[in-house]
Image (cartoon, rainbow, N blue to C red; front, top):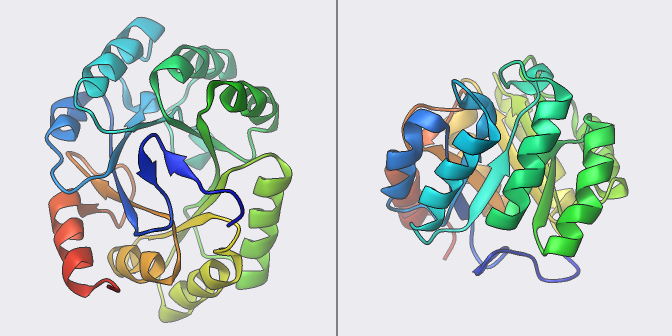
Length: 235
C-alpha cells in the first residue's frame, strides 16, 4: 500500500481487521461483538431505512467505541430494494457519523459523488463488487480491482461465490497480486468460511463476520472467526 490506511483509530495492514456486520435487528449484537475491530451497519437491512432510523442506530453504535463502516447495499449486489435517491440521502446523513463507507463500483454516479465527500470528511472509501453466482478468474478479479482504484477507492473489496478450490485459488492469486494497493477479498458460499482465514493471511485487509444474522453466505460468527485467526493466522 502507499499511504497508511485506517478505519478510525484501527490501522489496516498490521493484522487482519475483523468487521462484524449487521442490520437493524443486529445493533445490540454489534455493540457486544467481542473480537471485532470495527462494525458495519447495513442500512439496506432496515425494515424502514429512513434517515431518522439509520442515524439513530449509528449514534448507538458510536457509543460502543468501535469504528463504523456504513453500507446501503444496492439490490443488484445483495441488498434489499431501495431507490438510489434514498441510498444517497442515507450516505449523506451517515458521513459525519462513521469512519468508512462501502459503495459498489457499479453504482457509478453515487460513487462519483460520495468519493470526494468522504475524502473531505476523512472517511475511508471501500468500493466493492459482489458476484453471488461464481468466482471470476484472477485476471478478471484484478481488472475489477483496477476499476475500483480508478474510481477513487482507498480499499477495493471483492466478494465472490466460491464452490471449489479453484475459486479460492483465484481469490488468493488476486489478493497476493493486489495486496500492496489495499484490497479486501472474500469468498461466499461453500468455501466462504475457509476464505475468511486464508485470504486475510495472504493480505486481505478486512474480513467480515456475523454478529447476529449473517449478511452474506459463508460468514462465520465473529467470536469464532476471531478465535480461529488468533490460533491459526500468521504471527
